[in-house]
Length: 533
Image (tube, rainbow, N blue to C red; front, side, top):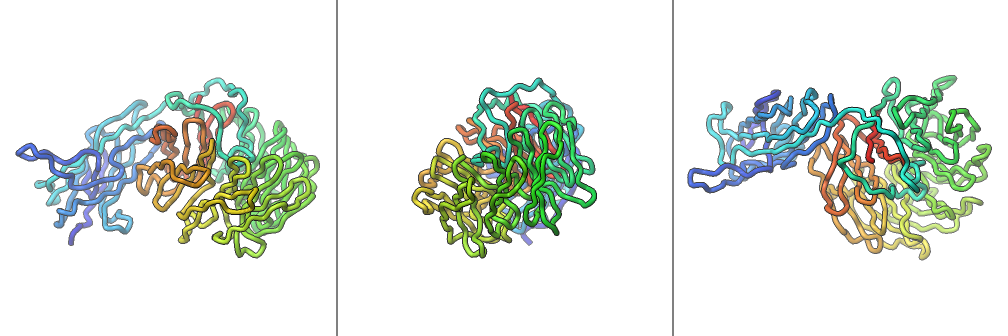
């Protein structure tokens, strides 16, 4: 047997198991020659940012040197005692015959930088009396435990809009025109709703954060997360709140039950008083936030393609049919853009609609559209005038490949389409579209003109820390990405990761950036606010 499934789970100083690091090469022999490492591990080094009390972990994958064909025993040593728990072995190999495991950070670490290296010894016997050539392998690390809450005074960036809907704006670009310095980042606060209900995406306006949590809608203070007002829809029947939008002093959210019809509600943004309620179609509790165009609230009404509501009284002047759900429309102010399956669910289409009348002025078909359970989990993204991007379903969680598509609206055609396994809503700024591809897994920056790959970034954690990527937020110099267990910032000039925040268990998260310079990371039942100015 080539790999012996031996593992030891220990804490603090030493661990035996299977694993390794691609950080440093192996040992120098008696003649001074350097041997190749006995195992190559991904990531080859560890750089993490956490806050006091966090129990973040690092996932590892290891590939044993081909020259080693006998049984392997391993021992892991962390002299710096940064990792309170280490486990490794070929039973963590993700089915590829290699090794895998993880290192868990000691939640009792003091504030500051903790640097050192994990030693991975690959041995011929359980007592590690004899090691293979190229052992030990070193995995250098730098773990920063940051200060806790920092309630700095809030002030708005001049001319920077608030984050009022899904992906930040009606164009769904995910772009905020600011330049950030990661050395100024600090945690502001953390907040969870009562009962740890799962949170929706957040929207922000005038120093208030609006978020749904189960059957409740909350307005929080940006300053300290205090609850300014809340609305509870538990009785007389349990209604679930969708992601809200905020505009012109009103908060809009769809409420309903999965087994019944939904209703669009409007609330006073300052007080939470209900202003009106307008009936809609069937309901899904993961509905994306609507957008506001002129005097209309425009929303995906579950299996209805698009529904309009008056911002004055909630009446619905028009509704378009459709079959797709879990998406948000986009608008350039003149037209509304929606992307989904046709009325029979047979092909995809980009609809260009006049919001004043509900008249479809253009329908561009996408024959390669993949209808993944009618769920898009995305939105069209507007680029330069007449340019629209969309991910035509499938995605990372589907067995099917899909495409990143660019539509030429004026020409009424698809300009270009790229095969892959694209996930999440793309982000856009200055002629470049950014999107995650899971084949191979990487962030891609592509030219708007022809889809050419300009650069890519590969997450350093192969499985445990980077298995999902479901949100992108852009600034002038940084790209924020929400991974499965952490949030990262990638420098748009160097294409390197320059900041991260690890938080295990906070998955399927969303990002938002307020005009006051606070980054919101929302996932599961927790919202984390980070000062970025």
